[in-house]
Image (cartoon, rainbow, N blue to C red; front, side):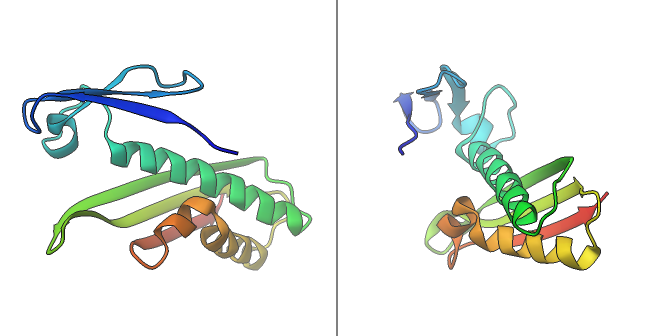
Length: 143
């Protein structure tokens, strides 16, 4: 299974601009630029914002799977991800991803939930992508 997306960039790094699209059409010519990525402009997206969305979605699904394996059915899992892009000695890098999750899981004990969350953090394919090169932290709570 392969998911596909494309990006087009025109111009120099600082003055240029680009668009990002996904094969499904969920993103269609979404704008991105130096200003959105490095200067806080809100007129488009950033690669890091898309990583955050992907990680939040992936972790939520992985947590649902872990809970299901423990015989628990979540009513709702809500995850936010904050991706930190920082300048390092080797250049810019994603240095930290903070996942914050709140879940409604009838019948779950704190211990069972915490174990499922820890296993989901390790097992999520996006977490695996960043293993050994990016700090991934998790704050998971039952609502």
